[in-house]
Length: 199
Ligand SMILES: NC(=O)CC[C@H](N)C(=O)O
Image 1 (cartoon, rainbow, N blue to C red):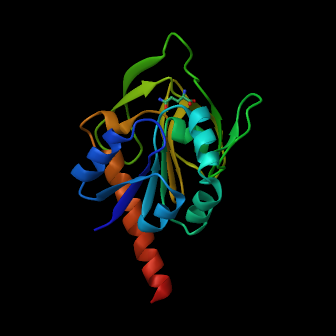
Image 2: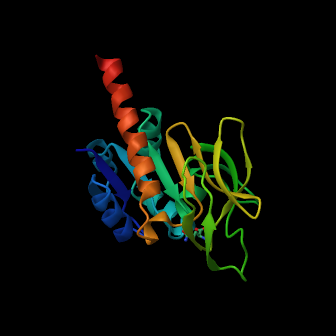
């Protein structure tokens, strides 16, 4: 069985664990960098990206997550996780992990739309996806290698680049686990690829 880790420093951890479980994979809360060797894919959850990056620095996650990425192991950033995965942030803020060629605006939907739901059509999914946005970011620009999976109000709110997936919304907060299944499929594909290389 494949194991999906959820970075367990801050934010919406529990809901992801439940969804991993219901989608048929094994879930692990990752609190120490050494645990990255026990997982096949990593979820960086929603929460507060400034707090999360401080905690990631404190526990020494930056280098090990970059290594995980370099090993082509899939990473899924949701909401604050999308902010942390971006190559660029708009404004003066410095980008953090730089895993995807997107520019992200934090809290992009502003105060009036602090939190809302929207039925999104997602590239590759037949039925619309009910997306829960909570002080969500969006991507203001994406490089040519980025596949845009969903837009809302002409803003990019879900995207994929090779083995990295991001969503501005919280896919773990509804019973709809199609994003989790998409991520699990990415993990399965990466394991197959790694096997081919060894074999
Ligand atoms: N729900 C969320 O993850 C909110 C993200 C938060 N606004 C941030 O930029 O850190």
